[in-house]
Image (cartoon, rainbow, N blue to C red; front, side, top):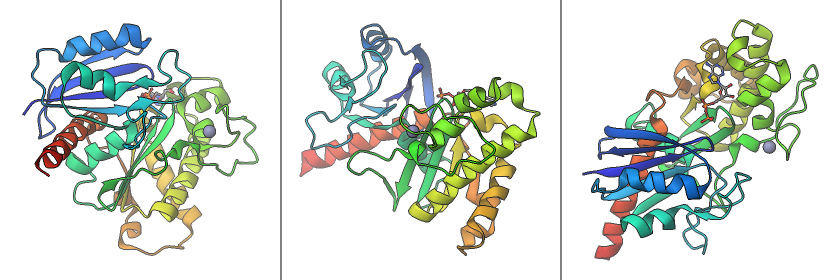
Length: 297
Ligand code: ADP
Ligand code: ZN
């Protein structure tokens, strides 16, 4: 079965063709300019390929409420041209196949849950720490939504007294994304994160903020595993520091078999940064299944 997948990001649109086993046979990356420039290039990539369904993991906020008039739209992004853009409708009209749609990070957690280190679990979360921070959540075997979808990058954290950086989120002074995404590291220390690899102060502060967030997610969502990805997590020294701060901050409050082994509770993504696009394939497959069932009903 041939499926299409899109990982729609603020800087690039990754488009791929793959199958029901998560195997990708063809992939391309198109810069995210305005919809007028970018969408025709995406459409022409998929044309004539015979896809049976398409899945889109999309930057947000997006409308994932199937009962809403604007289901499938990107809603409030400041990105020029993409505000109130109808992603699902655009591709449905063009290809007339089922189109699955969710956040980019729900796509990533779905990829890991289906084919990666989340396989066999019932509840797990995926956190990307890159240009922004986002959290995708599988709770009780299902992608979590609500009135909208989780916006786990904007949880408020306790700012360290020695940190005088204001945070780069225009809405919150002390949210996780504003304090800890790649641009925050660069803004606080005046150099790109990758150039600060040897400065332990940088990574201790980073690990503290990530660990605070992980304690919050653990207490609220009770995941069986926390999967970390995104550019900042390429700093290999960070993971053990996060585990150790996490243990201190949780302070023995919860006792579960998962928490006994933090090396398997807090882990890195396992699909070589393909979790997002693979998850988008799965979103397409799930939509195809749904549409077959509702056609039979
Ligand atoms: P995006 O979030 O845009 O999809 P990435 O996940 O690659 O893309 O995140 C980009 C951010 O991650 C940038 O802010 C960059 O500084 C940071 N980053 C990328 N590579 C590294 C690295 N090796 N070490 C530390 N930070 C990195
Ligand atoms: Zn914020």
